Amino acid sequence: MPAAYDPQNIFAKILRGEMPCCKVYEDDVALAFMDIMPRAEGHTLVIPRTPARGLLDMPEDALGPYMLRVRKVAAAVKKAMQADGLTIQQFNESAGGQVVFHLHFHIQPRWEGVALKPPGAMGDKAALEANAAKIRAAI
Image 1: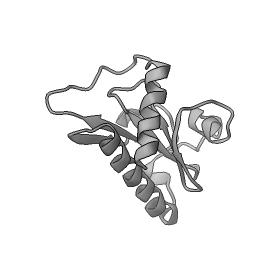
Image 2: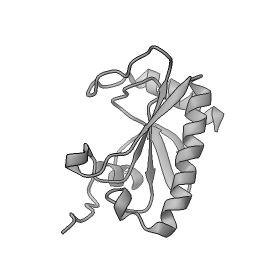
Image 3: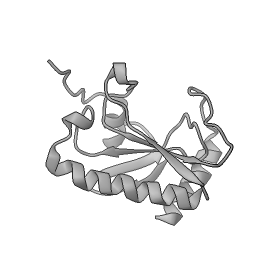
Image 4: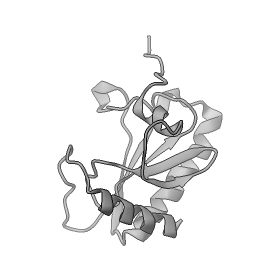
């Protein structure tokens, strides 16, 4: 039996305004914000407002509009960060690498010859804010 959605997860709290985030984009479908442990400059997360634990839990009628927001934010990240490409990741369940159990996509700008940073290091707040401003301007 699949695990239930937990409305107390950190992303649900961010959506309700109970936890802060460095916003990049928001509308009635999705919220995009900077990853506080970025693996690349400009690493952004896009989450749906629909409570879904993972991709397979997202209602089909909500998935299309959400994916359009993921694409919109990805294009802005690539442009704003002058990236050569993007790595877009989405994990499902613990065995698949998921840590926060609210559907989300990682958008990581990439440059030729530059590796992703190791996971787990907190980002500099001023740098996160500066990158968020660049991405917001590109949307």
